[in-house]
Length: 611
Ligand SMILES: Nc1ncnc2c1ncn2[C@@H]1O[C@H](COP(=O)(O)OP(=O)(O)OP(=O)(O)O)[C@@H](O)[C@H]1O
Image 1 (tube, rainbow, N blue to C red):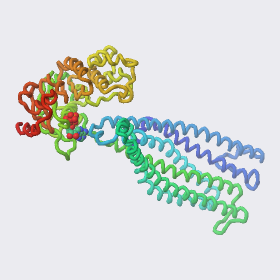
Image 2: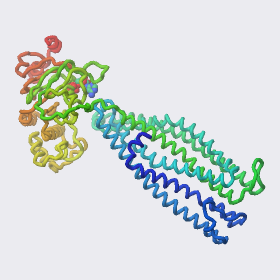
Image 3: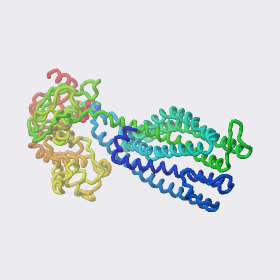
Image 4: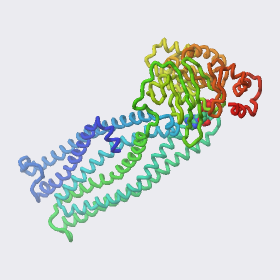
């Protein structure tokens, strides 16, 4: 928490200082009225002592009893006004500071999260990350907004009360203040018990968010599979875990609150009994000197004033523990090493011709698992189209993820125009490559915004031209508001094929040097695909293109077709050459063309051996 505070509060820290100072003076001013009341009782009502207020020059104290009465009223009223003014200053400055801090921590955490590589997101659920960005950062804000200023005010009150009570009667002060060490010991015991519970609460919030996020995202699946009751049970489980960890906290709190109440009330009772005895009968055994009625009234008022703040310590601890657990998660994320980032001497990838080389590339998603790609080598000349085909899970998408350096090769190198992708800046590398996948993400917003995403300065004419190339213009025109139609969250208001065409238009508009089409037309009907294919031929004519497709008709015109199986290239060549070879590709083609009904059983084995 200290780290987060030091790092992110720099710009607005003065607001925090102003707030703390205002809180300090506010509490000091609030202690004056009971003290003035005590003096007034003795000097004005009982007339047993002189009107003597420390720090107030004698010259300004009226000499008549009536004057002293009005003076006391004015002083008490003035302190209340001052307290209210200072409270306003405190609240404004501290609220401003803590909300600004929350804003800075949230945006910085988000920025950091964005820098993390895809592998990080593979291993973390969205709900978990959402709960860090939302709940954890709010807890952090709450601590600074509320708990910390409260702690400062309590500190001031306790110090002020201690000073006043010791000044009035140090012996009775020992009785009244005896509660403080007891309460401190009790509080420390409580803190030790409650700390791990808060860690568990924060993690159960993350788990619950993840479950809810998953279920809302998969609501269509839940409905079609009629798994509502199964999912209700799963939500009940995570919600119960949250309830249960909270219940542990509540149980500890219920022990703490009555316990601390008892200690502080005992201190009040002891002050009342000993002080009352002293005023009425004389000093009790072990005590000596005099105690006036006014002093006893001040003592009783003050002991009430400090029992409240002492009880609030529990709340502060609660907020502190909450913020500590949250801070740990935020810092954990901030400290997460960025596995894929620009090297210090990274250069810009500019004037790209589009020559791509895979040089003996091997890769595993999990270092402890087998390679997903093994010894992949091929070259693509500028402007050529290379296609990847092969059974599902063969590693086709993985090949292109390495090109964009979403993951790094374990062995070998991927080069563009002779530059190892690890030696160029990530931004220039990824700007060079346009990627359309089978899972096209659309942001909630209009069709136009989605097409121009990433090419934010595109004119309307350019957007329409890109949509025309992607065979999307006609259907967009049919939509209720044309290009201004809202597509809904993740584009739910569009069909899969429509979403794909918008994603294709987006990439066409960004005009990348290298194009990757990963099942980019898998969701459109054959007719539309043929139309898109014509546009794609135009778009890809002069640029290096990687095409991944299960529908082999899409790739038959590619310059080179690489057939992948189980992470290895098992065949390579043009469509005609591969048909002649009569291997895996030829068999797949025959199945798709309806010439044979199923693949020969031993084909993979045979082909692998032949290679
Ligand atoms: N993010 C990931 N983490 C771990 N393993 C992965 C990940 N993505 C893919 N894999 C695994 O890597 C292998 C290759 O996956 P890849 O997506 O490259 O196959 P593909 O040939 O593109 O398949 P498809 O035709 O079904 O899209 C598969 O066994 C898959 O389970």
